Length: 204
Length: 204
Image (tube, rainbow over all chains, first blue to last red):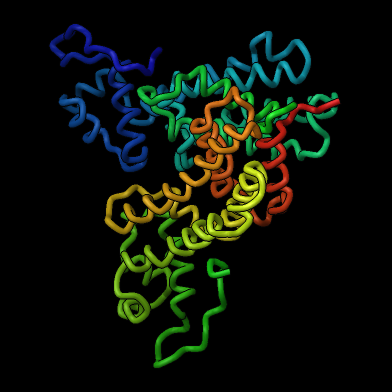
């Protein structure tokens, strides 16, 4: 799990005890706290307790840190659509697989997905990431449309609006879910899928 | 609708053509764009094209603007729980009434609800508003628990987690819903209620 905090590695070449991965973990936390635009390399250096040149030893620029951090969210999100379970089976099974997988990535990579979802698109790196995110979303929208055409999703809902509402629910997890809270990731996943697929009403 | 833009009123006492309501509309937009903390009375004056003293003619401080703006969201949200339809009828009917009413307030008062949902709690005014928001949320959580105890909500979901997921869906509207987009407020309301109450799966 690349986003989990990692103990500083053994110093090398006299640099303080951080590797690229732990620099990235701290950078994501600081970006999420202050916003990417408002974060300077100086602030990151201060947070890490190292000099700016020690950070530049690991990554050439703030933009590269952002790109690496966003890849931690985007690569697994993009992989969902390539999985065999997203392309075979009935449309409703594929939809459920994609939703469950998305929830898992959100909970496992909460800091980097938070960064992705809060992007404002002010730089080219941000715009590229937002375009990749939209491509991921489009796959789910397309699957929802297919599932409705197949008669697996009720006919009386608008598939695009419904997909946005569903992503609203799922994406909200990055803002409120706490790994040390009462609900386990599996409970959250089951509760979300239960509501989305079958609704909350008790059935006789 | 207090949050709707309003044509500037006739100038009075030589002040530029704004009344408190239109100052508030602009203030909410600027708070949402830059964040409340980062917004100064000078920025508001510039946005309105008036002097700072012209704003102080309408409201004594930035905090008062915030309080008035948050009341535009909180007063109708609090009124939902006081409505007769929230306190009579079956628990699932009451729950549906509260959800539908919440969606309506979010769409009708989108700017001020956006401000409320993005609050960070750095000042006493913000903390009081967040406490009022939590009280509103607790009513829905309580009703969800009651509806499950009544056997109206399925027994296999955790009511608190489910309520949070549901609010995640509904609250996301303030971030993505566009009044000039393809979906009408009523369609959004019907689609959200359809998914929450009965789920997306087509039934034979």
